[in-house]
Image 1 (cartoon, rainbow, N blue to C red):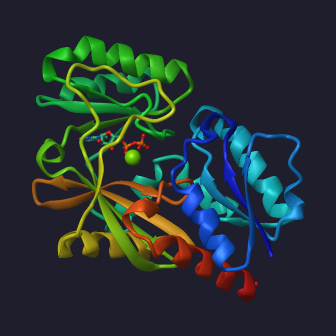
Image 2: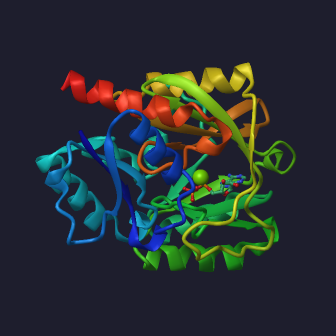
Length: 287
Ligand SMILES: Nc1ncnc2c1ncn2[C@@H]1O[C@H](COP(=O)(O)OP(=O)(O)O)[C@@H](O)[C@H]1O
Ligand SMILES: [Mg+2]
């Protein structure tokens, strides 16, 4: 069987998960290659499956990326499938999950100029970020007295074609960090701790991804319970899923659900790459 691991030209050589995954494919007897989704010379139909891995620049070109996913899925199997990718590349999905009972980071969506007035309702620190985003790009943290800077940031994001998310800054992340729970084929695999990423003062990163402080972590029972609720609320089962949680005042809250191109942090769990390959083989056998 031939497998393509999809990265991006902009991310070439920067995905630490690729080497362990290529090694796991070799152990399982799969011929695997890493290729950039935006390389027009690739013939994706040569592969039995395309596994999305580090297509990290999709946020700047989502329509093109979604069209590519649809096109690939017509020629071979794409994991996760295009309907999942479409739903999961815009964080409006948080509202769907909240409606299904998942505790999420409180979020207001600023869809247009008129909604900018919502920013003035905050009396503590708050975060503005694009609803289509990855790698903390465009995310910024503001103090209550920075209304004018915040509004200017939101306006810029709107002008760039993004919808803007407004959230309280959950300061628990400064002490406890963020927890990501990785699931493969619906089963829990491992968890990591990610250090806080947003400095005070309202400066947003423009890099492809912000440098991260990652450690292995034992997730709490409360974190497992929220992750299970998230997975149970999914419209379609996922081959891989990463559930990112922040500590809230009453317990863990969903920050982000990653079903497209999450780092899976294989360096923190040796077996996880083999588990993903085995799950992929099982999914292909099941047809
Ligand atoms: N409401 C928030 N409170 C505290 N930190 C936040 C909040 N929203 C985002 N962050 C920080 O910004 C980072 C990027 O935000 P996230 O929502 O995960 O978007 P991305 O898709 O860019 O990863 C998070 O890992 C976290 O450190
Ligand atoms: Mg994130």
